[in-house]
Image (cartoon, rainbow, N blue to C red; front, side, top):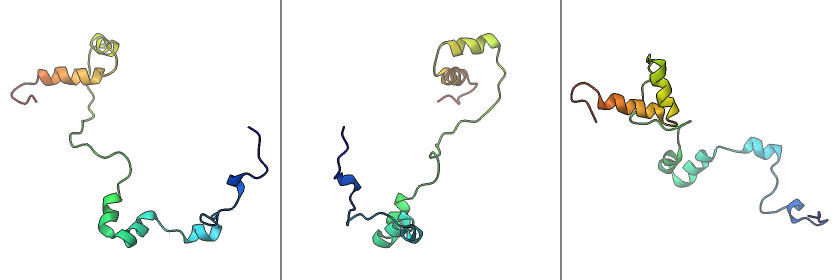
Length: 99
């Protein structure tokens, strides 16, 4: 594609001027502006924590020693092998704790 001499993208835009260093220093976080314009309740609804949301039913990291052939058999079955081991353990839990 040939480059045009009068490229619209290279022209200045009065409605959206290029940011200057002074404008960057003066900028505020978006949630502060939302809180002013729409109120703190809306800003709180938009705010979210860092990272992935926590699950209600979290797993516990536990070391478990298994025979090598048992582990290899589950791994050879493909993706989800840990979930399948968890299901077998759940089905064989002692007492009435099964879900």
